[in-house]
Image (cartoon, rainbow over all chains, first blue to last red; front, side, top):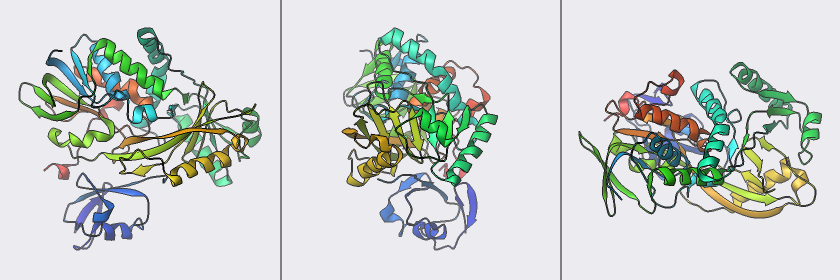
Length: 66
Length: 372
């Protein structure tokens, strides 16, 4: 299925979750925030939140941890 | 206190207060609603860098917006002093960005090249020149001197614009907004004790904007990003004369002789806690970058929550064609810097004037697939 990630169209398997998408970008261990269709998603939900056709994902990276 | 206004501003930080003051100067009736105390959140926590060139990684409308707002600051400072008596300690003595490896030096030289093409003031200096300018700084591979950037006392700016708003508009603190309701003829803003009516509402409540964005048919896409900062007091004759930046750390000397050290970036945290790991990163940065200050006294530490939109740029403008609702949100690391120009844009919109081309870039654009 096709989704938008940071404004770019991307083709992913139908069973993709937020976590599996992050793994594709090697971002699963990085300091990031994820928005799914305009809503911030809590880290605990990454593995269970499934994506569907035409979903809009924003991934924002941060420079400095705490 | 009346209940009917031309404009209601929600959020009394540096953005909301400056907007309320500037609209009130057009003789309109303005109400500013603040849930706590004016400026209690990110605005007064900021280090106060006016880093128009420091913070930019690419040319474009946002770079232009930052340069523009920086140029407005001297007049902004004078006007605030005349109206409120508060001196905001505008110190335009430049910012030094250090390179500690040859790769960093190469990157900074690339940055200087594009910034010079687009109105920036960056000059590459050698390590010898930097050592002569600042005696407490570590060994470097040179660095960029951003001559026109500088710093200001963020807490005093926040206090000054809050006082300016209080002198010119109606300001109610301790008054959380419960909801904002739109009808064809007016906007109703409800607090615990009152319903206020206005022709337009302006959302300027920073990291807490998600509460009201859905009522304006915008997605709640604001990401709160906690930052930890601390303050040190140099001892003896060692000092820092201008703002230093390396990587994501910065060291901002204030008029009282202390230095603000910032900052962490911790997404989605609404806490106000200074952590072991956060403070150690900042303290280690001081030892690393300013070894001459290792005997400085630790004074205090605090936090602020920056408001970030996924585009990393603010939204400034009407949410739709009706323009009963405008937003001035998502200023992230640049709220203090961008308050003057944000208020100018909002006033132009309220007065029905045409926007400059590079200002239109900040009007909210929602991707079609998100409109549900």
